[in-house]
Amino acid sequence: MPTIPQPNRTLFRKHEAALREQMLEPPTSKVAVVIDTDAANEIDDQFALALALLSPDQIDLKAVIAEPFSFAHHQAPLLAAQRTRDGGAASSWGTPTRASVAPDALLEDYEAWLDRLEAAGTPLADLAFTTPSEGVDLSVAEIRRVFAAAGIDSAGMVFRGADQYMEEAAAPVQSAGVERLVELARNSDEILYVAAIGCLTNVASALLLAPDIAAKIVVVWTAGYPSADQRSNTPALNLVQDVHATRVVLESEVPLVYMPGFTIGEQLTISQPEVRASVEGRGPLGDLLADLYNNNPLHQMLGIASSSGGSWVIWDLICIAWLIDPNLVPTVIRPAPELATDLRWDLTNSLTRHVMREAVSVDRDGVFRDLFAKLAG
Image (cartoon, rainbow, N blue to C red; front, side, top):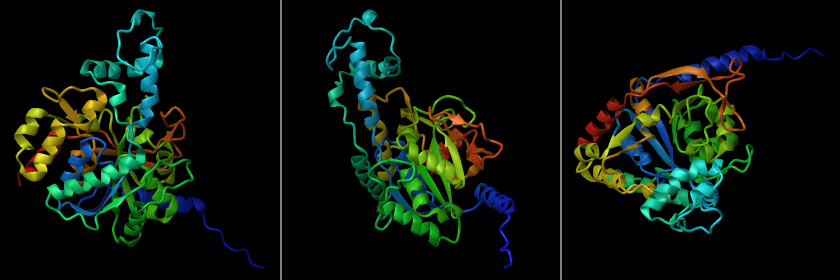
């Protein structure tokens, strides 16, 4: 019996790598986009969605999928830190004898937060720790609210994604949003960009349920530190909410454009005077964004008294800005890191890893000039 020829895996892998790098080239024309967002989490998602809706010449928006979100992972350590600070007292604001409290890593992480809450007179019991299921429903409503303010019909455009995080790396969470993402990817004759501006539960679930779409989509995701930074990514909400999903996407070899939030995305700050001058009064959409800025839902959660005189980071704009004009967000090709157990980036195997594109800078002024000009019409 003749021997069946076996494929040359090395050549196949080289072909895959060449295709991936080709897909990772910055876009030069209008792009098809799905936005995957935890829109009710704070205010940056709404700014990013607004910019996308205001950019029909650059972005062909196919769908917006709501993600789960929750700050519940902070609840137990925050309460524990308060008990440590209060010398074991019950959960209430008092006057602890701080000299008698032994140094504690948990207290060190949360003491500034506790101090702000105490100064604002906000008891821990008043903080609403939304569940992931509540978070996705709040996000659906918030997405529709942004569409309405922009004067755009959201019918057939907004989908409910996962209502929980992945319980293990091989356990996708099915949802209408994931089904729509798979359908759009499979039916697209062009690259479908997925702007993931929250946790990766929906994207990872779609890749697990339909691995073939990895050849049809490019994921543009913001979170964490640059891949060469050795700090733990534990402060990165978009990463830590669903670590299983983060690992699935990193190991899937799907083309990934990684936008580090810390040191890069955090440059996208906007001040209250800028909001008053260039956002407020710019139609219903501008007024919605200004109201969000002035009544940020994270202010009570974090014990921030007011945005007056300060600024706020609009992290998620970075993904949309790159899709509109890659020159606003310079990027380079780098090995995709692995995620270590302590949530640090691991580049030990960088010589044999697939590559991704990573942002190394951002033109803060250029991004906001574009947003302001589009709000002004």
